[in-house]
Length: 214
Image (cartoon, rainbow, N blue to C red; front, top):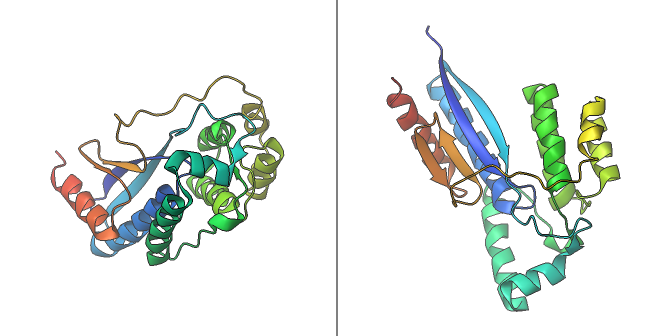
């Protein structure tokens, strides 16, 4: 049986709950594709986007950030309720009450970008999961070097390149989504979707991208 490849470019930021939700929806869609098209090999290509590059290196208080961003406590509660509903639909628990800081994600992006060059796909996916979990589930400051080193070592990374990446001081150069924000998905460089779409929408996009292969 001939094997076909499906390349999916995924643009994300660690502090975006819709990116974690979108990742879960994507995983569901990929499993569906593997059931219906077992001859298709899926390759995920991750691209970091720093949503708030102007944020102080040490981050800012989480509640204060969202109050300033959305304008009122009721607006913050409404936004968080919307996220909670979407997260629960894909089995993701997000505890906003525990999050203390809105971190600057430059170091986390440098770390993950370097990991992609030295680690296996499974190892990098574990690192990505741990970074999301550290922020959304355990209220850890993923802008802190010590936290990032601990997480990377727990994922089996011991390469000095990762630790060196955390010493960078220049601004992180975000991937370009053409103003589409994150999460953003591109299938085989042919079809793009912006936002955390349901798994069935992502699955149909995969089928359409495969159908238009030359």
